[in-house]
Length: 302
Image (cartoon, rainbow, N blue to C red; front, side, top):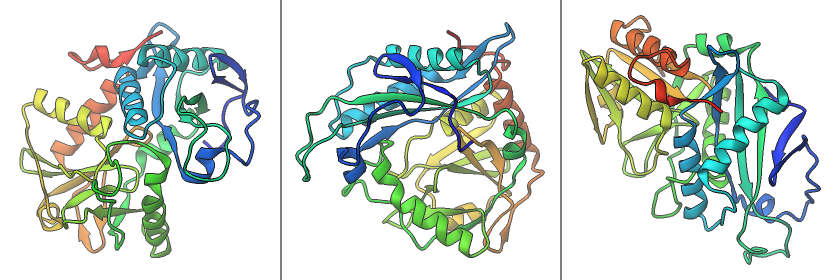
C-alpha cells in the first residue's frame, strides 16, 4: 500500500499523483499541521464501489480541521464527492483513501501563511493484500509511551503531529518482537493502540475504553452499534489494563485492518476463537461490504 494510484484529487480536480508543486518551505511539513483521514472503499453489488461510513469520516475530517485552526474551502459533502471522484478516475473498487488538509508555504515560525487548507485525496489499491492484513492476529505489548493528554493536544483531531507518540511506541514494540503497542493515558487508563482502537469481550459484554486521550474511532463506533443489534451489552468507560487482562478476548479495530482478535498483550494470552468476538468480526465484515441488514446506509455510493 506504499504507492498511491496514478491519479489524485487536488484542490478541486483530478490530476496526476504528486503534481502539487509543494516545496520544503511548507508550513505543515515543519510543524506537523496536517489533518488526514483513512477511509475504505469496497466493490458494490452493482459493479462500482461504495465507501464505508464516508459521511462520518468526512465529518471527523472537517471537525479535526476546526480543532487545529485550519479552514476548509469544501463542505463534508463536497469532500465525499472528491473521494468518489478519485476512486472512479483510477478505476478502483477495493481501495484505501487518504484525504489530507494542510497549509501552504510560509516563513519560518508559527505564524501560518493564512488558514485555508490545501486539500488532496490519495487512493491506494489494497485488493492484493487485503485478506493478508485481515487475517493477522496481532501480538501487543503495553507501551512505556503514554498517549498525549487532552490538556496538551487536541486528541480528538486526527492530525499528523499527534502520531509522533504512536510512531515511538510502535518502534519500541517492534524492537521487542511485538506487532503493535497498547498505550495508556496520563491517568493510567487504557487509551488505544498506536493506530487502532481496542475493546475486550467478557461473557456477552463488550468492554470499550473511553479515554479523553483516544481518537474517537469510527470502526469501534461501528462495532458498538453492531454489538447492540446482536443482543450484546456494551460497557464503555474508563478501563485499566487489569480490566482488559480479565477479558476472555481482546480485539483491535481500525479502518485499514477492520476488526481482528488479539493473540496476546505481553504474556497475557487471549482466546482468538472466542464465539462472541467471532460473530462481531463477521458482522462487521458484512457491514463493510454493505450486506448487514439495518446498516446498509453505511455503504456510501456515488
